Image (cartoon, rainbow, N blue to C red; front, side, top):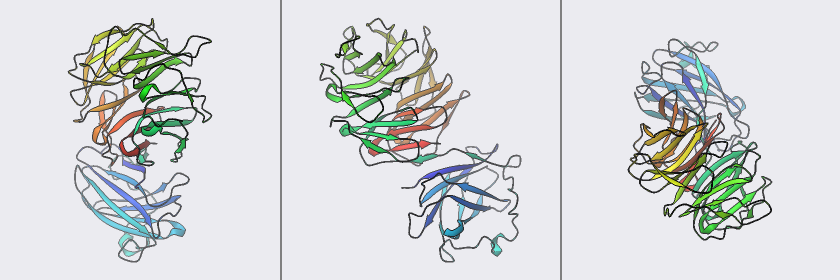
Length: 420
């Protein structure tokens, strides 16, 4: 598994016509602990050096990226000094608008990544001051997507709470991480697929799954089965507090039990027969929206126990809904389309600039939106502009969550991608 750890962006000048070099740091044998590696980059027109710091617990092989502006092309040489692990170097050809990959083995023999940083090939380089490749800015350390895939079981949903992140999926899978790249399985007590997970502001967790399965946890690692009195598949969960939670499923919406009771209460959905694939509402619980597999529709409730239909203009499935404040976002087909509205307002389309079906949305703020979908698609809306992410994954992604600093996306074959 290649693990991306740091993007070194040549700030200000990188563009779609630039090029990305992904450098994989290897050792023989693999599995060596990596901390800080000194890198020196030489191109035909400029050279520069910098340190790459890996998070604690990182072992080889691990990767970092360098984003080159369009004015730099042709052959590039990367020489690495791993201290006690030894040195290594390698070369690759940059191609405008594309990615190049390079593996450098620390401590390798000459010719396969064993070049010395002090060798003649670097004699003309200034190793004391980073060179400005972009002509107006130095190297800037930016986050990159890390592949933290665990196992092969498909994951359907992800959510964070109390310094931890939870992912759920097929076969009753529940995984937990504290953000260190390691995921630990928790016992769910079910083999049914878990389709949605959500945590209340107080840190209480709910996981909704097939055959009416609904699980609850106080965050301590133990999950308890709830009384739903339905065998319908449950797909989504959202709420404002531990006592005001909604669960959407196949032709059903449930609400948390009244005080002193244990049975979840079915709401009036006015004969709607679609699958409720997503739920989101305003913080006061007075405006709640449900995404479904109907004709580009969203369903709406004021929190009074009854739901009505709202048309968005989309032509088919609405697969996910999210929002922030009074701004709502809905993923619908045709592919790459997100609809947005404010509470009480009309819906209008946003072109997410991707050609794949989008399945998961998460709003960090109004105008700050993450979207994921088929073929490893991840795109980010910020400042009115969509930016497609480079992840090196082709897995179909189902859900995304962010705390505003770090981002997690999950999907097929146990895929977990982490931006940090």
